[in-house]
Length: 609
Image (cartoon, rainbow, N blue to C red):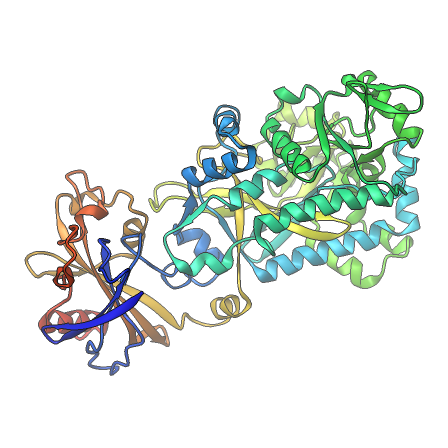
């Protein structure tokens, strides 16, 4: 690498060279660290940078500095389908799983990530810690196990239960725990998803999910299963794992089972995927295909192993010859929806000795939940618009209803159907396209946790009454987290900096470019019809703000944009000179404004015109 300096007109350029050559790449122009007079900004030294993307931007600057603003206006990151296929191929050694995912799980991966502030994630952690401390209370355990089948009292041999999923809604200033799952799916799919995000800017790189990235999460998963095995009192290495679900190959998330299988195999652990009917209990040993099983990764929704097809597993579990995780006791203590009633019953919590500080956290972040009974039915019906109804025995949003969508017929079924009523906390919103006519998507936040420690955060993006994987552009989404300083800046004071963009057409006319339209340029998506068939110079000025008004120009950027007859953006048409010449003179400065044009842009910015 090296640099050469040369001049054109009054502007100096520094060009980064690769092997002594100017790369044949679309040119972008950045005015870096310019020290410009507030009233009369002037160009000083321009640096030419080379990027693979035609338009570069910092999401925190272009799109906002709070999670809400980014969810509304940031489209700088998207799912890279090619990277997803590559990640699958790398994981499996071939492309079979990518085809299976396409056919089986067409809407399992959302098109855009979701942004969540670090403050919200700290609150999520506080809720999970509060629940852990509450569940450890002897009074809680006795109460919960008293209302569960006898198998829930069986000692799980030290196993805590893998993949707890704490599901939250978060909208504006509200955060609410909606549900606790003790066999939350999707963890391995989120590992893949994190590897397949494409960004058109460097500003979001530091916001990527997970401590240690997707590879770190995979290691946490392996460590978690090893901990479950050793906690069961076993001294020998974990040899064989069975992933268990009814008709596993027919399950929507069967591709995830394959990913888990490859993960275990990569660690030298034999792994099979089986139906509970495939198991046999013989000579005090649980067998699958005649092979002894050490650990069962339990994905069943028969939480208490009550079905006839679970007889072998049930016998082996009660005989303490196999580690089952997650297990019936975990479901009874955490995931039985009646526990949501208990978590919001202040008198009960005080009676069993839960600390006041813990009760305060639970009261703040767990929406009030009550059983639907004939004695309170009329009151609940009158207040239904602020309530959400879910069956005690349901899972996966089955049979759940928003109160404002209820009909009298459904309400009668709810009254006699063993339901709970939960105070409504609206889900978050994520706009996935810039068109204001298109409604934003909804999302919830899932924290994957083990032994009370969060391992990974993911979002589920959807449309409809309840979370689903049927929405175009919806599905699991990575959670990007704002840093402390950026979060504080965005939430406690006016924006200190902002970007202003302008279009210069071939006649010399200059117009301010609305921010949503600028985002369309960044995404290389369709713009408005008024731009069809035209070619423009684009000026992007990054400006310090005082009291909500432009104060000083910090940086300037210039480039070319062109649109086809339908208004579609084509970066290959945006550079006036983009051939394969080796000549340094191939650098083109025609996107730069004249001094008169620069003064006019300045006038528009500071409203002197």
